[in-house]
Image (cartoon, rainbow, N blue to C red; front, side, top):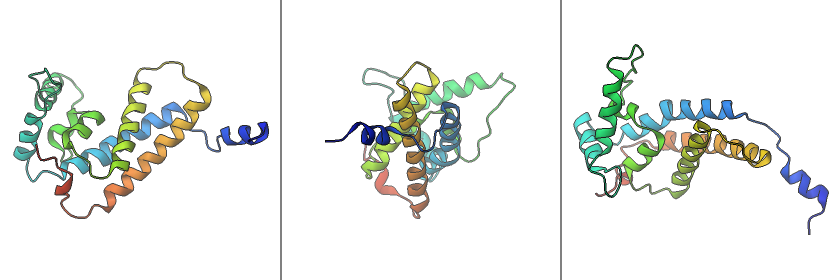
Length: 168
């Protein structure tokens, strides 16, 4: 059995990462790593758009990821701040969860779980609430580590990774 000192030592955080730092890392990851990685799965914008059109937003929904991306894009038309394509096309109008869903099947379950954790943390940070301080600190460290794991995994994919695309 663990004594009180051992338990307290296990709860210590060596590096504390603020919520703002985690959110900044998540945004950078989404823009600089995840979107380009997902974009590699499609040989053309047409192929990507076809896949976006095939992914329904919900079981009962008639709307697709393509509809969602176009809707967000149309809101930008009259905005003074316009996003740059940077080679990812309509993917720039979709969030982390949408990008995970777009590929469907992820053969590396560890990467899939990391991506889901990152998306979950991003959602919680976007809608602030009060959480246990120790769990929050550990979660922030975990998510930053998961970002590093995903980025390294993406770097290691050297060829067209067709095994990631779901068969639907």
